[in-house]
Length: 304
Image 1 (tube, helix red, strand yellow):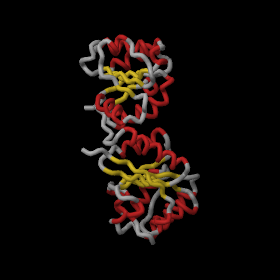
Image 2 (spheres, rainbow, N blue to C red; image 1 turned 60 degrees about the vertical axis):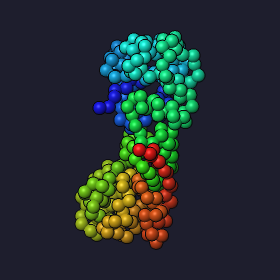
Image 3 (cartoon, one colour; image 1 turned 120 degrees about the horizontal axis):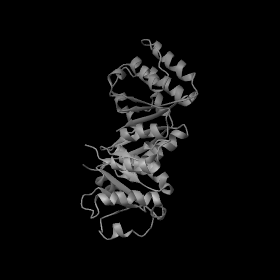
Image 4 (tube, one colour; image 1 turned 45 degrees about the vertical axis):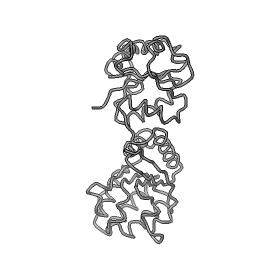
């Protein structure tokens, strides 16, 4: 069962909390309680703080000088520590995000706190995520770097091959990219039955891009794909398990020629291809997609 984690922080650390800490906790399987997502307008701030904190199993305290000088933050800290003043239950996780002196209520019980002043400290991230019952299947710095690289390329309208090694939480990474950075990104899983045929794949791509259409059998399916996507300002789609392209005879040269035109000539489509084999090794050099300018981002999982 996932742990319910309340994140207590000052808004000086808001960007780090929203774009790095919370995504890692969520992708790792924790249920995150954070004011930005839970608080409602028209209701008392302190009352909502207390109710949200009480609904969680544990509290992560993101410590910084601004945190310790904030009455609201100290209120949350004191309520969290009151549940476990001797730090024996593991329900309060102090995280030092910026250099600061630990308050006596934390220093005197002398708990093992997490020092994340250096955001690239993989061991500190692991200590924090393990304490919250979260597992990315990769180090947090590697997972976040892959996220940032993919987002950077997509924002430049450049297609990306996300090469996955081992068992990192790549699905969660792609869904996080769509939810928080690229809301227009459609997701198509080539493991799903409808994608086994060419018209089925075309229909799934159009639906994922927010432009569902009636797709006729071969060869009319590609005419619909071209017509619908060409009429749009631009579309982006993630194809999960792209490795399947080398085994599906229905994914023929006509399909990939049509995709190449949309990707390279008209610039109406951007592709995020997730695979375990690098894109260049999946297709022969004479293949229509082999000339695509595809950026490579690798996400390496940790040994089990």
